[in-house]
Image (cartoon, rainbow, N blue to C red; front, top):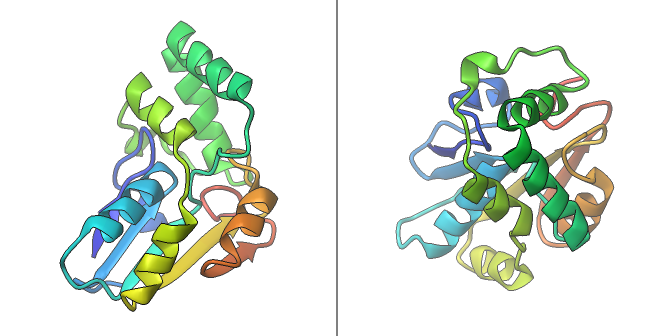
Length: 170
């Protein structure tokens, strides 16, 4: 399986053992990594049977002022921003994500905040025969899970996990 990590994280795939499929023909990603996994699957010429998007970073319904504010906060206090970010990713669990910390860049943050999910790319992937599964937590503090569910559910098998956050833990 090819796995793409979330923003400022590495090795977090262990949290998703119940969701991930251990096969060479599976591509998966968490949060920012879901965006990267999606683009990888779209551009790939290799056989891919399953694409798993876990808590995909979904900000296309946010106002430009939200994105600018996030980038300003990151620039002003990178350490504080990442600390709050990791707490929000783990919520409502108390999972310690610091062992998985890989400090992200402003460019990565800007890319994830300004990414637009393309419905035509979903159709193309499905036409290639790729099974797409999307997992969201109803108590996500990173993204608007309801907006994400409304967007993704007509496009692929989308699961909204009750009482779970961005890390899909309750």
